[in-house]
Picture (cartoon, rainbow, N blue to C red):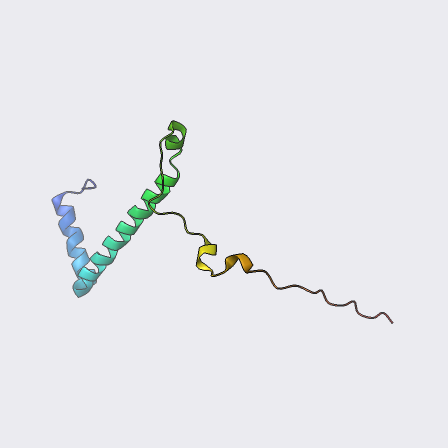
Amino acid sequence: MFGLGPLEIVVIGALAVMLYGKKLPEVGRSVGQSIAELRKQWATISRDLDVSAHLEGRDVRPARPAKRFEDDVVGAGSLSAPRFDPPADPPTA
């Protein structure tokens, strides 16, 4: 495990207990969730960047289709920006 021996693991565990005490289960849970999310994102990135699959002709599709912003907006095709009327030229004296 990362080249750590049993003594190093015990020292790290003792430091964790001294630093976090009763909140150690919460900290461990949040670290585990962060690592799981990082692995998911890494898998997505590596799948998206898998150029060799496209060169070899393999079919690599994302686990879920990409969601576009227009899908979230009701009637996205009818949206337009407000019209901008430039200010009138000031009268010259």
